Length: 81
Image (tube, rainbow, N blue to C red; front, top):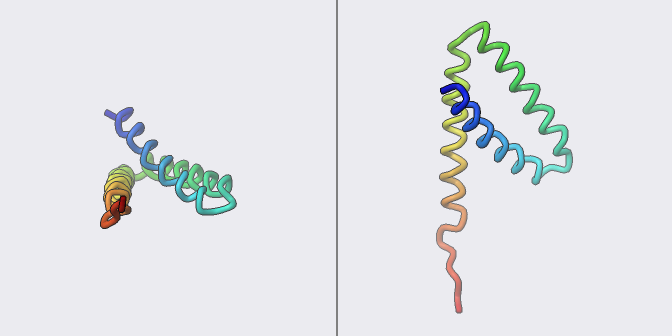
């Protein structure tokens, strides 16, 4: 179960970081901040287990919000031929 959650989290966060790096010139710095945040979150979740559940809820929310925003991106556009 943990491997499935880790894989899903990786997909959401990698999509998030790729989008952020594409908009900024300092993509390496953004990736380093995300990695540092992940390490801090891992340490906190070992010490305080509810932190991991809150982080999981945040990642699920982020994934659903990005999917919803991607679906609405081209809403209302149509091709005129």
